[in-house]
Image 1: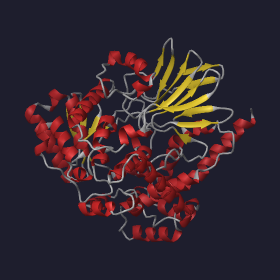
Image 2 (image 1 turned 90 degrees about the vertical axis):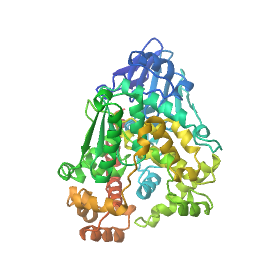
Image 3 (image 1 turned 30 degrees about the horizontal axis):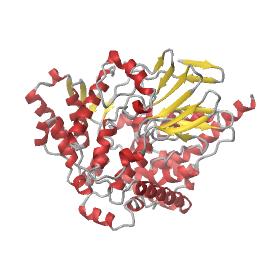
Image 4 (image 1 turned 120 degrees about the horizontal axis):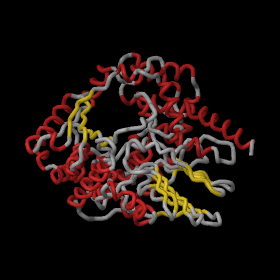
Length: 544
């Protein structure tokens, strides 16, 4: 769909049309709204026939946008010649901005908006330096310095005369600010049930709901069950302990009411090394750059990268459950260490110590962490909960795979859930208070089923036996990177990478080594990719 008038244009490929029943292009006498994917209310039930009227009423006001589940971004061209673009409440929508004296361009594809930059494109070295050590892009950075990410609750307005203004429709303090109050578990359970009912109402196909032996997927699966919508419950069968617990959970549902009556099925799947080996790392990277221009979690290279199908199923998992956990302080002993630091976020520099990285890249990381200390301190956080804020606002917001498609639905971005989880004390997180309380509130019989968490040794042994590391599924790619490519050396020490290669060849490579290699693959490809985009941009501007 396209809307063009004097000096303005808006385009929507409607790629989500086969996934959602609700439209992403809404036209009426006030204007035209374009959406990356249909948003969903977490505060009121909305049936499919009423969805479009709800969207018109909700998405045109700041207050309405604050009642919408994060995971989308939108824009509107109004009949009065004004324009607005906005990101979701927490900034998880994939939205990028270029603004200069010639253009304001907003879109979800970096390569597209980069064509509107009026100067030669340059690699954002600050962002790349942070990515090299943390595996995610910092703040509002993108691989191109002139292309910025639209932040949480950000709104860009263009007035009739062309003046550009920015404001936010919600502030960080509302959801991330420190306060001393007990979490309202009942309110969270109610909101999650409303959210799953609304998501299921406008999904074309019944979603895939992930269920493992762990805590976070149990909460989201319980929320989906409580919402009463059909789904295919899926368990990855890599670890038998996960499968056993998942089957116990499903069996406990059947004791009360059959899966068929609930509209549920349960399937156990196993990753196939053959399927993962279909494309080389080089092929995967090429496809990832075309779709995401370098702004994606490097771990995506562990499997084939394909364009999302026209008719995709929503996927529901336990993503963002980290706000309920002692993230970076998983034991009482580590919590004590964290509390002894000048500020809890200082713990992150220990967790990501940059042993593989160049000295040149380290200052940007320390600068980034200083920003996060200031950010969390400004919200009143001086205890370990600051690390949970960091995990969600600074890491997860830029790392989550759900932002790469229009078929993911992240239940645990629910703002009621986030606010309640950040009200937990660090001790309550170590005691798994929220997970247990929510599971009990949503599906009480699951409280009797134990959890399962694999040890590091179990995970390492299983992955090694199955041959699903990237050096197994794309043989030769590591050697080609380390011996034929050089751009990665801006971020990774050649001597350390040579040691890594020897460890992999000895059969002792682990997930940490794979993570380092994946980051190196991505960063090595960025300079060439940006240079190619610059060639295209320059040729277009030369014709103006």
